[in-house]
Image (tube, rainbow, N blue to C red; front, side, top):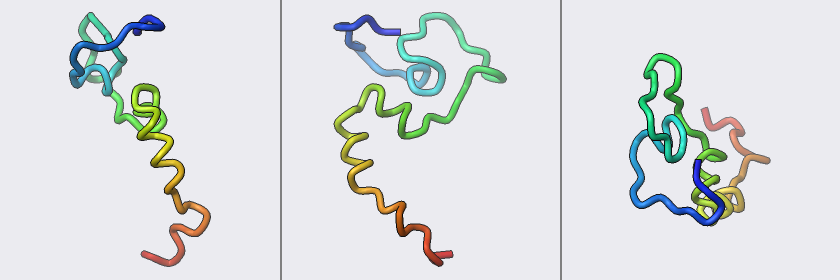
Amino acid sequence: KLGEKETLKEVGCIDCHVDVNKKDKADHTKDVRMPTADVCGTCHLREFAERESERDTMIWPNGQW
């Protein structure tokens, strides 16, 4: 985890697919996840807010498939 005013110097796969700033190894059979928008939003708040403001989930999906 990051401290309150700490920033990542570089982002790697483990930051999104396991845990932000994880230093030790991950077990690929148990720890790996596919991040969802809310996970991305923890670091990319502006982009997450923009995504949420553009959602049309009230009407979608509506017979598109």
